Image 1 (cartoon, helix red, strand yellow):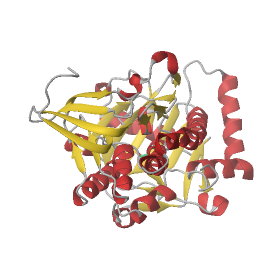
Image 2 (cartoon, protein in one colour):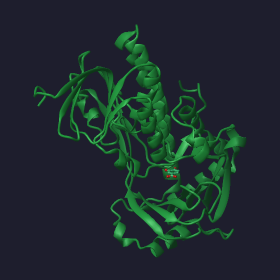
Image 3 (cartoon, protein in one colour):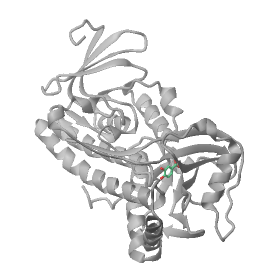
Image 4 (tube, helix red, strand yellow):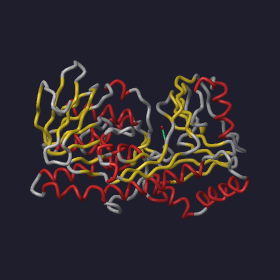
Length: 403
Ligand code: DHB
């Protein structure tokens, strides 16, 4: 197939596989510096826009969207949150980000980040091909890598690039191009998943609620004034059909119940999905002329909402490195990417793992495990060091501490 005839051949400095937040943000940042890209995705724009993902952006990432000219819609439609609530043992505990570490986060769904980035690419004349198939990445160990794909109309195309970026998500095919003997895959599976729902109901709490009970975890988030996003811990192979609305509400209410009488406001459930997750990192993040960004290189469990933020951080670091590589420094500049991206990746891996295990119960947990976890939760909310740790990790790390 590699040598089959193609309908068009286009030279481009950077070809990007994957039009999620990492790929599009990278293309946007390069575009601002006058560097053209071709971005490809097997999914249609509509498919990406309608797949629900996480909802929390670090303040730095939110600022990045506004200040680099993606969009200022986040300032109008997003909500700044200065804390979260943890609930366990039937009691609420507020973690005050502003007071503890002078930071905040923004509630703004990933689908909206995608919509803003896709519109910005369109507005700025960037090239993004959605709904492609048969993507091939060739010659990445040379300085003339190529990407080939079939467009949605059946025509076949080739981009001749100087650098290729694999930003093709958690089922990345780009990462498989790093030879098996030269890559390491680190990972961890969890014995639970999240049951995610969208409910047509009023807000139940002003801030996000992360709840732990002996029955497991629940998270109360939101999308709009009238649509709420909630999750609760379930088995990885949980059948969605086994969950009529009233069973979902009963489960959620039991997990957030407490002596303060807190109750969720109920309404019709308009979407139900079981979301499986794992921890994963592949190193190296660069092979020859190809670099990996976002979920293609690393995924985290959703607790603590680090995934989107990591993807945007990769894009920022990689844009700077690629601009240097395309300038006088050449490919040697790529060596700076992994160390600068990976420190944050492993910090986030640790935090996501920690927060996941802190709030969930696992099958086979002993009475000691359950009681010890309450001790850990008490440390997290009941000591200044514990609260500060949570606040600093959740809001992202101060700029400059990691770059
Ligand atoms: C949301 C998802 C998360 O994983 C999280 O930690 C916080 C919020 C959300 O979808 O709103």
